[in-house]
Length: 388
Length: 143
Ligand SMILES: [Zn+2]
Image (cartoon, rainbow over all chains, first blue to last red; front, side, top):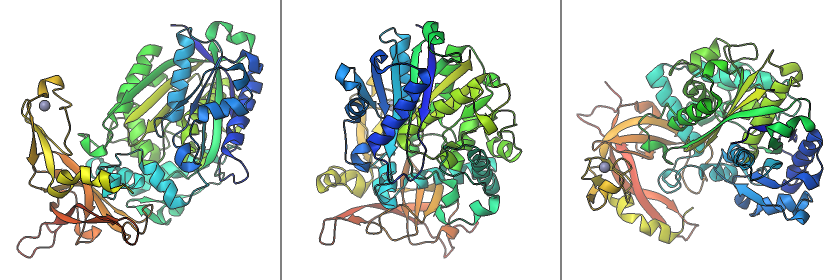
């Protein structure tokens, strides 16, 4: 297997971008990544696009070809592939690109992720997100995507004593980080009261426990590690990639306070990198709900099971904490254009490891991690990155 | 919302809580599966459909206020994960009670109710919902 490096990153603003179409977003992120890598379009050998549900959000399928076409790279007839695993679509697209370069099939690969969510109503958006769960045996019996995470939260509070305030602290921290990110959807700090007084979505989760619907796109350029310095002085190596699956329905899991797929994907990525959790300085995790971040930092092995809430409350996951979690603002504050999210996580980690994260820079960040979740944990993709 | 054929296909399980028993390992599953995820090929030919009792206890629950189509269900409503006596867990609504009456461990039983309608003159879909088991006039949740 060849070593693989990221030589360019690009990201659009995230938010309710009513004047931006899906294709405009995808191309914007791609162009800025290509510009960052200082490559010309004719060097690109393949494109992978993470996207969850363009068919339902904008009634457009076949978005791999669409992005290749409007980026102007289809005229070279390069392979363009759409990758779907609900919320993990972007992370999985990155893994496909990584494998394509690692296997020597391609040299220069573009990995993009995009979603245009705000053309549909809030209820429609919620129903589309719920299709990441088991449609026949969860959604049609009344479960929304938020309610399934609420089931995890209720049980986590029961089994581990996690408090309502600790859930709020995840949102407070991620908004504090998001306020330092010029591309974030929400760039405003909030306090516990704002979370605790926001309208109920699915008890105990309130509006400020949930990531928003967002439009946005992100892209990264990959190439073999050995030639990365030809393009940039600051390449970042992808040193580990792990993917795992679990039952589609949450009710089939023995323990709904644990995502076994996160544990498996993490072990696989760490083994490939020859590292342990202690080596990770900065992490972007899948906080689509506040409870998701608490479960993630436990299953990633940063904290023991049941202590994620306390660790958050104690500031251990803040910018200056033991491991800085979601420095971009996470899904909660940066925004969650579903297919783009996994790629946006990689963009943030690369910025941190290059030392270009400005006000939210983690000091001496050497190793970074991304954790991207599909559904309620039926697909998890974990990547590890290192500064070169 | 699902189409009528999709609902009809699931009717035996939706109406009667017909699950699946693997006679290789003895585990119960709901809804039915074709193979046992624990026994894989060893379960082939050793499985049978089984009507589950429909009684169990709340494993986790939530009161849903947002995110579901109003034509589908009146808000707020309660969604629970129920651990059935046979050991399988299922997701469904809990009715005839308030969220404050419930806690993890509250005993419930399945009952056949209307799940949704397709449009104003559409097909009505039925399936299981759960109701708390009330004994000796006690309110559910009373310890
Ligand atoms: Zn079995």
